[in-house]
Length: 157
Length: 124
Image (cartoon, rainbow over all chains, first blue to last red; front, side, top):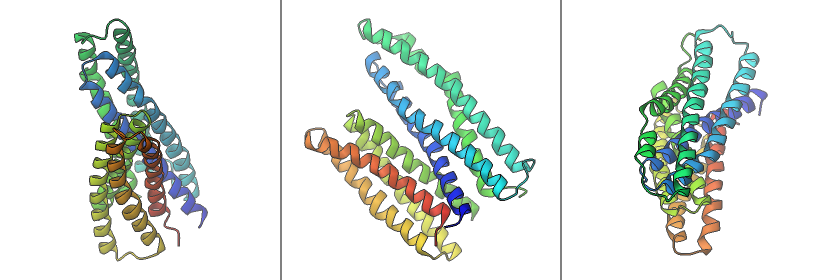
């Protein structure tokens, strides 16, 4: 196998970790929004942490090996598709981090409510269904899917 | 053809996403969720294989990498995913199945990543 094949192979593995991890986080978060008891919500939101670690590892691997690939193939950093992919990668990470911060605070609230009797809470329900958090998470996911599209079509390359 | 590649990769990512969710929930003994995640991954695997075969036909692709990825997808992800769904169902009532199910879920995530590596790097 050539160096380029190793680079492309692990770059794609990184992309799989990034996107698939985000899918798993989304599935677990959605599951949490359908529970009533704060202890169950806290437990399910806690389960997103390993999946978030997978997303982080994938994001770093994708960026690092992507930059190496640009150098290896002597592409120009100023090419539209590369610049757009980099900006969308940043957007995805930033939106995901802000959305994740909100989810973390929701988990803290759920843990507190669980310790105080574990009864259903309107405040928790409202936080789980917060449209801003959902928009951030969906925006993060759509940005990374757009990166995937750029990687496949490479417009202007 | 690019649309086929895009959808093939995207649905493949859903397969691995379902398997990651199954692995995490199996680790924490949420067997019902693990079972449904595995079942979703199996359904997505069937779609991914179908799209992949369409791509292979369009490109007239051949090679060891294609055979290897077919083997991983069919015998690893498809049959393994079905086995995971069954094992997760058993694990609800049979303690002996729990450790095996959790390990199988992690193994399938690794097989999914290995399949992606082989398809992208195309060794041979």
